[in-house]
Image (tube, rainbow, N blue to C red; front, side, top):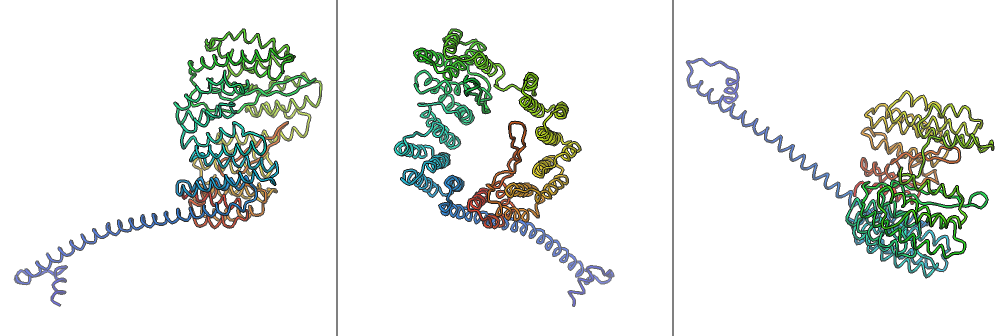
Length: 624
């Protein structure tokens, strides 16, 4: 009681001065109380950071444990995918699953991955050599072997090349055929990230017989990774031009696209035209040169080598009684192209290009090439040199001019429709709309009106012009096209920071899904929507959408996991518009990032073994 009374007095009782003993006791009690209070506060203040630090450390340790558990589970899952891949009947699908799984497993269990790459390559070889294997199946095996060895080559290019050599011997023995230079170069290209020098060495062997059409693109990639290796390889290629007897004018033309840093790999193609005459066109594929500046020393060396080659070719052709028109045309195109470059750059490479041009012009006359063909060859060669492209973009003017001259009504309408299509692509929407109204063909008019509204809506999205977008969208009735535009609008709104509008567009797109008749197209749309949801911060109900997507996939026997895409028909062609990135693989990779267990459960529910395997691979990619 004394202690309690003293404490009470210390807190709030006034003591008379005539009681010194009690007063001293009270002062002492007060001091003790204050000290205890301060000490207690200090202890509490120290305990809180310790508890918080301890809690944070525990949470970090727990997360680390869970991460290791997920990695272990992912590795086991991928090994399960590899072991069960033999149950997939279709060869290419089986190899696609294997390469996806083994590629991920390499850095976690290299021995296992290496063993299985070799094991399955051997199995393909054995199947190729079997007497019961049909010709069409052997073709499938060749393509699948290429895919398998490209994946292996990303990690060990030399081992992959050895397996390719063994398979080459087998192919020659069984079908009296050879693997193409492109097949060999694809192995080198796949290994660029792992070992650029070894990749270049393998590519140099390919050049001993031919210059594949993919060689300029390969050189551009090699240059980005190892400029010295690229420079060395292209010098090897130039040195081979005069000496490799199997080189054709097309091979030298392909090499020239890299030498002159062209934006397109353009090669001439020939076909039989009217009255059995030869007509020439161009096949072109885009390139991305890392450096546009020409190396004058390399150009000079190439012009010298090419001049030697072209003179030797002229000698061979002149010995023939009736020179082959296509061969002469392909070679003359190369002469005119290189002659234009030599004149533009003030380099001749030790060759009189005007004399060489005259020599091949005489050969062209002997080969009975028409003046129209010769003019076309010269025009295409000059356009490549001066405009860096073989294409002419004139917003339909050439087609409209040809239509005016045409006396065939059907051909005239077709040319007008092609010109309107080009106008739309060039963004001349008002002019195109007027031309469509004048078009006397209901089918073409409907196609072009739909295409015009679609492209105008897409252009409005790029400008964030929502009013114009909605106006054009209202003119599109097809559920697939409307779905594509709404999904695109959701992504554009999201990227511009308008989450509310993004959600509204996405919900509107999802409301259209039941109206899409084709199950595989509907499945792709739902997968895209789930991927978009998983990539946003507000994805609380995404699991339900993914579940519905899996159910739709199970009902769509032709769904292959690709992105959502639509096809627009325009005169003489079909144009595909894919929704980039948001495919089956992206969806499950994002799902695993948000909900690892849920993603595995969703994958397990997929009935197709191929798609189920790819879902596991995509989910594991996020973890590994």
